[in-house]
Image (tube, rainbow, N blue to C red; front, side):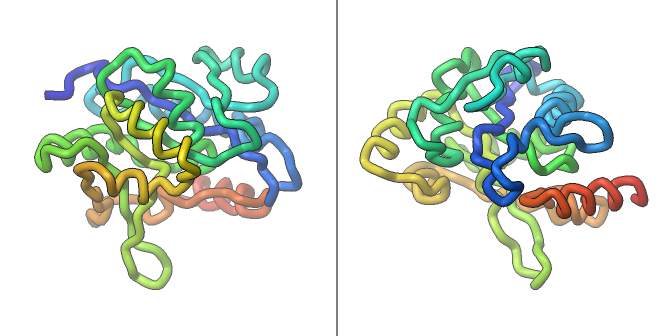
Amino acid sequence: MIGSGDITGLVLAGGRGSRMGGVDKGLQDFQGTPLALHALRRLRQQHGGLIGPLLVNANRNAEVYETFGAPVCPDPIADFAGPLAGFLAGLAHCQTAWMLTVPCDSPRFPLDLAHRMAQAVLAGNADVAMASAREGDDQYRSQPVFCLMKVSLRESLEAFTRDGGRKVDRWSGLHRSVLVPFDRPTDDPLAFGNANTLDELRSLEISNRTT
């Protein structure tokens, strides 16, 4: 059973933003709101009330992120080591049995993300769930940074990263894991669209206004 408030929501905003010219991606505006704050609000709006505490993983501008109303946790691994470092940062501060991660740069992620991921881990008796969605070539691909995991996996992740592991799917493959398809007719085809560049961010803004 995963009930109301049993999942900590973690917004991943700790990257270099290299394809945006090195800017702090989580602080770039999406329709007048910083991306990371937009993601926090979307986590608060998740169907079923499964999301309880919220965290932000950020490695720069902590004083700005702190104004968004959630504790800020930097990577425990140096040199912007990728999403698994963000996972570790969140797990170190997590007080619930489960944690759900979302990136800061996918502003249209589903409002029923937590509910469907929770259903999938329970149905599959799994420790980890990752979203999957159709991409342009009509193939389904995993979206590994949209990840629901048991907090008890922290030691496993610490060992994996200590040995140099950096790929989410390789780590999740060590555990009972499920892929959760977001393929219903009512699902937003751009739900997992992410903004790696400022142009892509503007395109997402435009598409959001017209849908």
